[in-house]
Amino acid sequence: MRDLFASDGQQGRAPGQPLADRMRPASLDEFFGQEHLLAAGKPLRRAIEQGRAHSMVFWGPPGTGKTTLARLIAATTESHFIALSAVMAGVKDIRAAVDEARSIRATSGRSTVLFLDEVHRFNKSQQDAFLPFVEDGTLTFIGATTENPSFELNNALLSRARVYVLKALEPDALAGILQRALADPERGLAGVEAEPDALELIALAADGDARRALNLLELAADLATAGGDTGVVKLEHAEEVAQGSRRRFDKQGEYFYDQISALHKSIRGSDPDASLYWLMRMLDGGCEPLYIARRMIRVASEDIGNADPRALGICLDAWDALERLGSPEGELALAQAIVFLACAAKSNAVYTAAKAAAADVDEFGTLEVPMRLRNAPTKLMKGLGYGEGYRYAHDEKDGVAWGERYFPDDMPDRTYYHPVPRGLELKIREKLEEIRRSGRRDKT
Image (tube, rainbow, N blue to C red; front, side, top):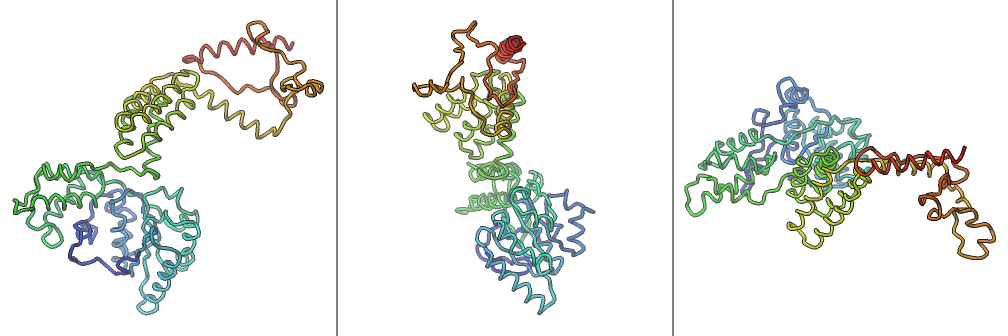
């Protein structure tokens, strides 16, 4: 989608134009937040102030100023500005932008900044399409993404663009943006005032997103002025527009994986309180509870294992409760399971043993099953020696075929499973040590 469409500079006020768009900063002096990038002396600020553009990628949450910074860079470098959205654009649009940039350079000598919003939605071939024109100077590329560029962008593109990380805005920065909107007589909400408590609530509900903060303020102002009301945004107005506001969470994006990672690691670290916090963060953000239930089954096997085998059953019970009760009733069972996992004895012995065994499978290939371990359901197979020499463990002393060997004959003995001295694995460890000691004695 072209920027209505490939316009230069800041747009003027148009009928019905949202407050968030009207209040887009026209200079660095109007920009709130991102001090780690834009404080005096920082490289990005110097580049903007000195009118020097280079290819870059802005990575950060929605509403943190990615588009605004791209516009400011184009304005200060007196560059032609073309904006595309990777949601709607394709290679054809890139080619059209290249043709436009060449025409602008030929007629006016101006360079062109190509701003590509949600660049992570472009596939490899689409990303490759504009690389030659970045290299030859036809375009200065500025991308914006909410996803981790390391995973979503080609190495070739990353090698030609510097990545700047934008952070969610702090409540104080959001409050400053809201106050500026109320004070601006031309672009803002002329004649509208707001109680401090109302602004504070809106800033918190926006959750680091300036666009959301301004949208909420505009809705609250509409309520405050409806029916000839006072024109003062009060706490009750803010509460009404902020109702149901979601924290930042993307079901398939960076926040999703960051938060499930934090939950998993809090459980592994035996912190039930932090585990509950991250659980509630994910549920509050709209995460499907059954996804969390499935992930907890993985945690039960990977991080607890046989140190407390009850963990797996408790997770399965929580999953069953969720399916029977739905949300929100079944979420308490999920919370119960997560607290149990966090408090349980920990062992990754099964996890590491399974990985080690898988590595040997890959290394040794398809080794033959020893004849004594093969089943012999037919007379022919018995005649060929299937099952011959097999020792039935239940007929042996203590139910163990002491000294028997179960690996392929052409493979050396292996010990994958090393139970930890915690929980039930402490008893398992003692039993295995006894079996292994007896096996070694029988071989001598």
